Image (cartoon, rainbow, N blue to C red; front, side, top):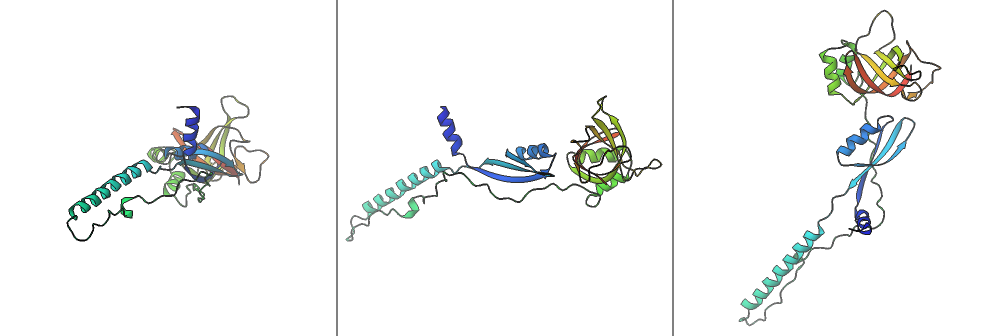
Length: 254
């Protein structure tokens, strides 16, 4: 097959498209999910908090060849019926009626595919709603339960890759493997306290900087550190005892 044949075949493919909106920082998870369903990522339009993703996939092709063969078979059949009718009715006084070629023996013409560029199909944005203590009893139990054990491990397995949202505070902040601008940040549920714990596992943002990776929104603080109260939207990672890893998606100092 020549390059021109490949190009003509590619141009003949028609696509259907979908527009999806997702929280910034989660694009690769959304793209992976749609690609598993046969969609191809076309464009990304990042906004302040969310990114618009456009996907496409080929439309099912109409089996024109099968319809043409079926139409030919029906034409031959009706012609044969007409000839037989003429032969068997030759002794009648009335002349035999000509073989009928009714519309039942042909395939009605169909609209040909348009050669012009296809307009994207308008779709409603698809947004992933984070789990909160108000809409998910499992998260509520996790945040007020033990720091480790079967409950924590089960939540990590069941909700891997999902978004969770909660109020927390920075309990510890250390340089990651000796780097001066990258940190391992410990997040605990509720307000900071040196005397008691609100329960739940010790969450960790691992190997992040404080300028881009936390995706800070709202009032930008001069510094953040131990004791800073934050509102977190993050993607569930693995539970590596005793730490529950999270990927920050949106962080706001509260």
